[in-house]
View 1: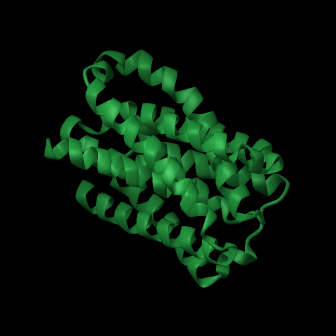
View 2: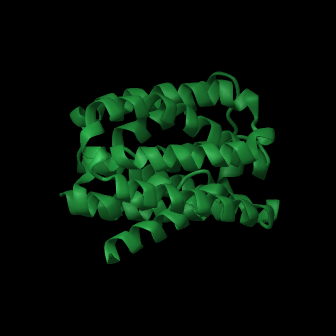
Length: 244
């Protein structure tokens, strides 16, 4: 009972954070569910509530998608993410996790201090940034944080930032979910109760978070996202340390 309560609270908080920062569902839910069923199955099972929450968030934010960023950075990020996911089993480990953490720490620090304002991705740079962020995210299994970190390099407003990050996330979900169902479908079916609880929590958190986003001033939004990315980087450092 305690585990399921922790799971649904993490789902609510993850959905709310994702509505503000464009990431957070997988980052918060994966360690909780993995403590019970292992990381491999947890990642596969969480892809279902992740897709549900992302779809609800995209419906709410559909008018704010920056299509230029989506079709350059977004497509490259989705391709890089799938490539990284395929290579995950071959290139995982604490060194890669530590590198990923370092990238998040740098991006978060740059955003908090204002250094990120000097970075702007256009043209070919947007494709490269998208591909690399997706690749690193896919390799480590946590794409949302590094994707939002890279999106800080685009001059887009608060709602466009979240809407575009959400659209990219749904592209990746649409590609990876059938694979997880084909390879882990039986095991996921055994977790139907936990999956339903996570879906309910994520959807509720998404709706609450959407209201919260509207209250955050543009001047506060980027430093807030940068702070969340910095926090994720610190967590990844801890995860890398545990893997040694």
